[in-house]
Amino acid sequence: MGFIYTLIGIPILLFGGERFRIMAIIYCLMPIVMAVFGFIFFAIFAVIYNFLAGLLGGIEVEVKNVE
Image 1 (cartoon, one colour):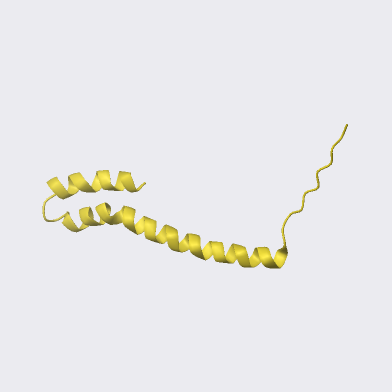
Image 2: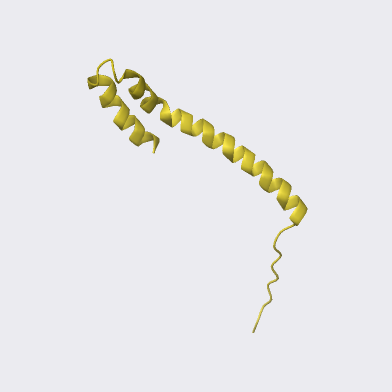
């Protein structure tokens, strides 16, 4: 997704003129913003998962050999 945003932002930055400069810069920086937010939400949900896994336990599987 970030690559697509960059591909849209570069032509706007080059050919868009002064009116579209801010929008083009935002499009070009969007991959960095997406990476930062992705890392933050991943860390938050990892902490929540680890907390709940400790409280609720997990799934236990028993395997038997059948002849």
